[in-house]
Structures are given as C-alpha cells and as structure tokens.
Length: 232
Image 1 (cartoon, rainbow, N blue to C red):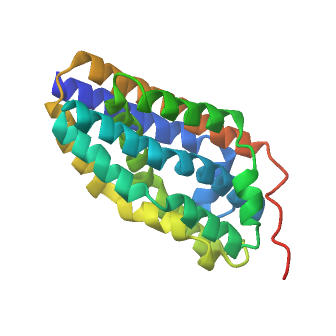
Image 2: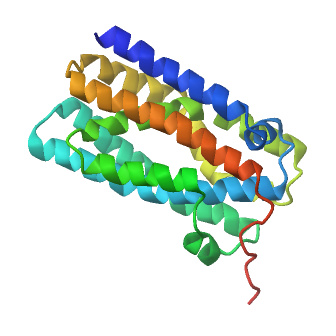
C-alpha cells in the first residue's frame, strides 16, 4: 500500500510540473523572458496563498497532535508550518523592492483558482483528515525542487526586470527546499496505512495540481499590475 500510494503521489507531482510548464507565465519565468507584469502578478498570487498556508498548516498539525493521530506525520506538518512562516513577507519584500505597494498587494483580491485553493486550506485544516496537507506540501516541495532554481537563474541571466537581483528572496528560499525536503516527506509518508488519510492526501494533491496551474493560467491573461508605491 505504502509504495503504491507514494508512486501515485509522485505521479501527481510530476503531472503538476508538466501542467505548470504549459502556462505562458511559468515558461517565461523559467527561461528568463518574463516581464515585470508577469513576475509581479505571480508574486501577488503567491502572497495570498502563502499568507493562508502557514496558519492552516499549523492548525492541522495542532489538531493531529491533540488527537494523538499519526504523530510522526503531525510533527512533519508542524515542521512544514515553521518552514513556510514568513514567506508571505518575503513576497511583499520582493514586490516592494520592485516599487510596488505592499498595501495594494495585501488588499488585492486573488484570482478565482487561488481563492479556491485557499478555501481548500480552510476546509482541510478543520476536516477529519488534516493530514491531507501533506499532499499539498509534497507537490509544492517537488515544484520548488524542479523549477525554482531554474527560474532564479533565468531571471538573473536575462535581467529583463530592472532591480530583479533585489527581488528574488522568495524564489531563493524555495530553491533551498530542493530535493532534501521532498526526501523527508517521501520517507515519512510510506508508514501511513490509513485509507481515509491516504485518500485525503491524494485528493489534496490533485486539488493542488489543478488549482496551481489554474492560477498561472489566470496570470497569463493579466495585463494590470499591483499599484506602484507612492513616494515619500
């Protein structure tokens, strides 16, 4: 059961990378051809989901620990919550470094796929199977390991975006995730043999694959950017 479960989860992660690479915004970030609108709008969506993810992860871990269920996995979730703490602020720092208003980003409305994903966080954290967050964590770590470094290298190489060197703290943090975090999750997950928890994890992985790619397709269609920071 464990090996088959992990194989299915890994297949979802690989499929997410394929879906992401099919979007115009992701391709341009990876090859360095992205303009400032694509980068800023992608970061704005990242702010919204990162801002919602950390407290949801922490709540899920707390509930699992309180209930004494799957303690090793609860501790993994707790560690993931600590790892993502402050990533929303890194995103705001990057946008501010490019001249955008932090307040405008914070008060902006995320695109529908991002809204749906955030709603899923809220549901999952209060559901009977908060371990489903491990499906989200696995896909995000796998995406970071396969794409974040390439995006940083491409954006720096082309330098199409003025001031980009000062505006990569979020992506650089994701580069640091790399394969180590994926291996940590892959080591912890096979011990799980609860069919309901496995279903929650795989369902969350599928939701993440669908909505993350949908978020980037929405960015593909954007022309407006966050408001610029006012001087003074």
